[in-house]
Each structure stands twice: as C-alpha cells, then as structure tokens.
Image 1 (cartoon, rainbow over the protein chains, first blue to last red):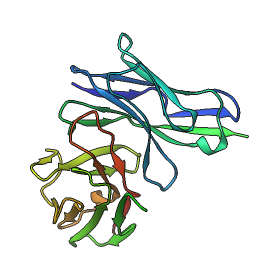
Image 2: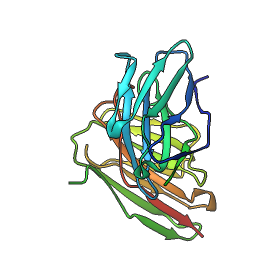
Image 3: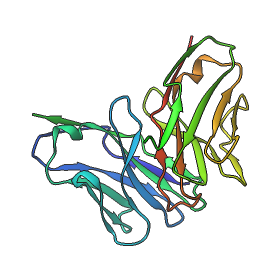
Image 4: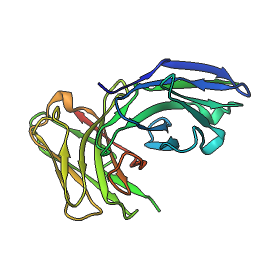
Length: 113
Length: 114
C-alpha cells in the first residue's frame, strides 16, 4: 500500500538556523512528490515538486528537497529559517493517474526569534 | 486575480440541513478536486473531476456530491449534514489529471455543523 510518513509532527528552530523537515514514502510505482505549505487559516501553496527529473529540486522561498530512491525519502530543507516560514508543511505523493493523492500528516514548523 | 476561489469562507449550519460550497478556478485547468481537512489537519481527497470523468473516493458518504456546471466550476453539495462533517473543505485544480501535475488550492471553507 502507498503511504507518506512525515517523521516529525513539530519542528522548532531559531531564526537564521537550518530547517529540515523529513518525509518518507512508500509506493509500488514511481511517484511524483510534492511539498506544500499552509499558513494559519490559509490554503495550501506549492513549495516544490519532484517528477522523475533532477533529484535535487529547488522551490520557492529558498526551500529545496532531495529525492533519494534508495531511502524512499524526500526531505525538505532550507539553509536559514525566517520568521515567515512558521507554518504547517505537507509532503504529498501522487501516483499514476493523479487521483491517488496521499498527504502526510503534516509538520508544524515553529521559528523562534 | 484569485486563481481558485471558494464561497463561502465560513459556513455554520445545523444537523440535517443541506448545504453547498462553490468553487471556481480561472486557470483554465482541466481537472478539479475536493479535499476534506479534519481538526488534526489531515487532508483526504474526496473527488476528482474533469470533463470526462468523475472519480470518487470510496470512503466518502453518498450524502456528498460534486456538481460541475462547466469546466471552471466544481461545487460540493452535502445533504443531511452530520456533526462529523465539520471540517475545512478545500477545492483544488490542476492542468491535467496526471500525477506529475501540481494542484492549486483554494482558501478553504470552514464548515461547522451544530
């Protein structure tokens, strides 16, 4: 069965320090992988996506993620956190056909001044 | 311009009522979706629809039905509302139905059933 596991429900960092949000997936097929961000009381915004091209994907706002097939991981990183990065982050797997869209449980990122 | 819009933003209603949530996208996308986000922020896909095909998540009660008057709109009708229907509902769209295409989400509709 296909699944997405976000390994941390909460991550807290200080402003200016690196961010690492972890995501592991399980899929019988080659998936497309996405990271979305949701600010409080807002809709979801796409940060980046992987669709079988380059394994290191750069997204908006300085975020990037690396697809590692051997580890079935797609961790999200940012070199230096900003206060405005505080939000909920979702790792998403989309499987062939597109309807099979599976969201991770989310990781809440806190950024301390 | 808002790419994916939903109305209303908030909806408070009583058990047993029937309600609708409207969704419009101005991106020219072929495929639209409805998602439910529960109180623990967990998101689950409910429907996927393009002009040829409606795909329904088998776990969604048949009290929920999507209706698409045209390619730019996908409304969600809910009959006989129950307490457990309280959630935030998101509409989304994507250029095509394939897995490689990202989805663009609306701002959400917070439904509260009392």
